[in-house]
Image (cartoon, rainbow, N blue to C red; front, side, top):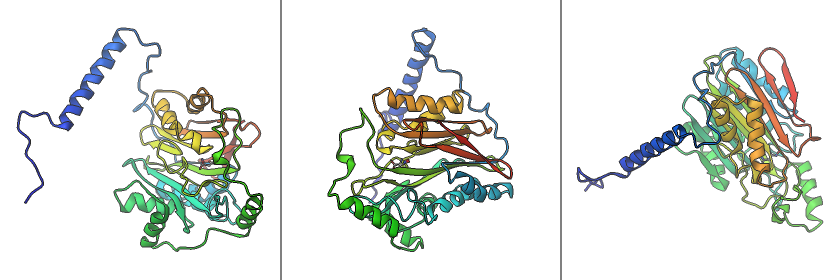
Length: 346
Ligand code: SD4
């Protein structure tokens, strides 16, 4: 028995229907362009006009320079951007005193630390991600396994842990003395997660949060983008933020460049800001203005949130923007030679 059905020759398959409608849509868009009715004509595509130059690695926040120092030698010795991003992010994930990324930090409402991470490989536009990963330290490496060993793009929760163990990762507690003490202090107050508060239209009251984002281009001109976080403090168990969502926490396009985001992911993921920024760069908007526009899209809707973005084109042009973080010290660092340069965003 076969489950293949032969469609009558005259019938319009769903695929053909979609193709026809898409073509119709394109024709419609083209005619409205020539009618001069559009208010904001899309600038001519910049794609194809951007040529990859020398290898670079960009990493966000204060851990950026050190992370780049580990990633850049991989690039300068002819290694892949994928290995460079993984090495840079692993460095931050395994820092013993880093509370916001990796183990030993940001417990959820019931005192457990869980991790979100994703990686995107430019040449194939393949993505791997984990959300709410428990009891495994190197979230970005598990995300890489999702990308390389499976057809899936995102695996979550206890099943992500099971997948990691199946791929050979060690299961271990993500709690340390700092995260335990911080959670006990908070739990003693008998509060519930601040995620039950009203949406942040007046002010962003949420507890601490942070993410490492990294973008690299290798000598072969291949782009890789990744990010990793343990989300926001005292989140509701099961919460997955923006970081493992392609286009939200991070995004890249092999022909254009990449963007990474950090901040209130519960708000930011509603707007796909990194996708937005990369698409604007494709149209010729500078990385800085692309980040500003992506953030403005969120604030224009009335949200008061804290967040930052950094973006870099494959030709090395870069920029960033932030909202509500004038005094947070958000920065990104870039390394193209021996030393990383830090770019504060205020
Ligand atoms: C999240 N965006 O899970 C992350 C946290 C973060 O700066 O980046 N904070 O919401």
